[in-house]
Image (cartoon, rainbow, N blue to C red; front, side):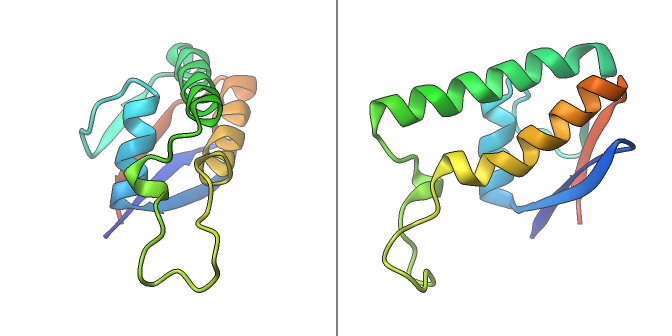
Amino acid sequence: MLITFKCSAYADISYTRDIALLMLQMMGQGESVPGAILADQVAAALASLKNAVATQKESGAAPAAQQKNSYDVDDEPVSLEHRAQPLIELLNAAAKEKCNVIWENS
């Protein structure tokens, strides 16, 4: 199952459920789906996500969502930093345009 993040200032971003829930936790939003971040709270969620990604990168510990899965084709799993980048860009656009961000099952 996919979870899609949406705002009027950026293209929709979809993640598998496990990755999306990890991103939501890193933004301080819990695991509630569907959900939303009001425009005035987007900057704080963005800062939380960036901080969590940086902390994980510094620690060198890969969260469960970053571990290599049996369906990975190449030798290296996708880093959390790379997985988070589209959502970071969406949140940046939402903060700049002062719009709400929603997420829902898709």
